[in-house]
Every structure is written in structure tokens, then in C-alpha cells.
Length: 171
Image 1 (tube, rainbow, N blue to C red):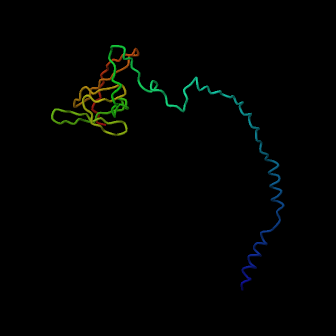
Image 2 (tube, rainbow, N blue to C red):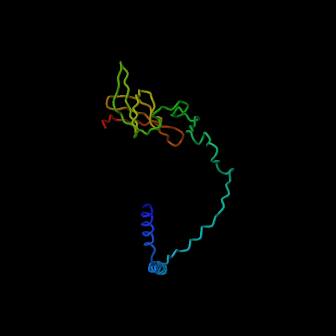
Image 3 (cartoon, rainbow, N blue to C red):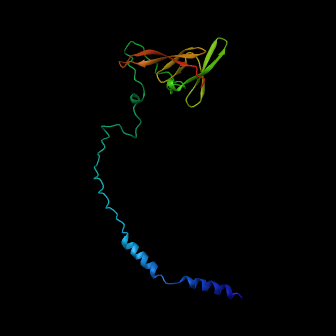
């Protein structure tokens, strides 16, 4: 009884062995008719050596000097200039276009503006605090807007004042 399944499997497998000449003929004719054409590779570009002259350029491994990263003010001139020694405020990394007024808070005779940044954070800012990229100082907080006085460089070492408003925004 146990040999019957083994005998059936062996007969089934013997039936799979047969004439394959037609299959071999098809494979050889297909290979002969369809020859793949592979174009030759292009010549790689000629390498040109670059001599790095460290004494002529700033090294990429050394931090830039203070003069390149900070604003340089000519203090010899007697004109309007920002105080670069003061610590930058938390909203002085945002352009005024990226700030929105969302409302006001009042207590006794003090009024603060609620300023929202483009990343969704809301800050309470009062008169005298700084915001914006151009040393902007809040001059006045009203229920509908915030008046900001910015210092704009004139190119000759002096600075001029420019007044901007941040309007109350409902959106």
C-alpha cells in the first residue's frame, strides 16, 4: 500500500520528460534574430587638478571672522545708529511680513500686543521691545495695530528710521 503513492509520483514525473527539440529550436532562433545592440560607453571627461590655495581663501574648517557675521557700524560718524551690543529679542529673526497681530492684552495702563509668527507661536510684546530684521522697536500698541520703528542702513554708515504697522489680522 505504501508503494502505490510512490509509484504514482514516479510515473507522473516520467511523463514530464519528453521531446524538447522544438523548444530548443525556438530558443536558438530567437537568440539569433534578436541581438541586443549596446552602444559603447562615452569617454569619461579628463580630470583637471585644482590646487587649493589656503592662504588666498578662507578655510572651510575655521569659523568665519566676527566682521563677516556681525553688522559693522562706523561709530566715528555722529549720526543715528543701532545698539549692536544689546541682546537680540526673540522675534528679531522674523521679517515683519511673517508676523501677524492677533489681539491685545491690557492691565491697568499697560497694553501688550499678541504677535503670531509664521510657525504658529504667539508672543506678548510691549512698547520698547524689538522685533523684525531691521532693529524694529515697538513704538505704540493700539487695539487695531502695532507701530514699529525700524532702523534702515543708508549705505554710508548711518541709519534712518522707517515706521511700519502690523495690522490686526483675523485669519
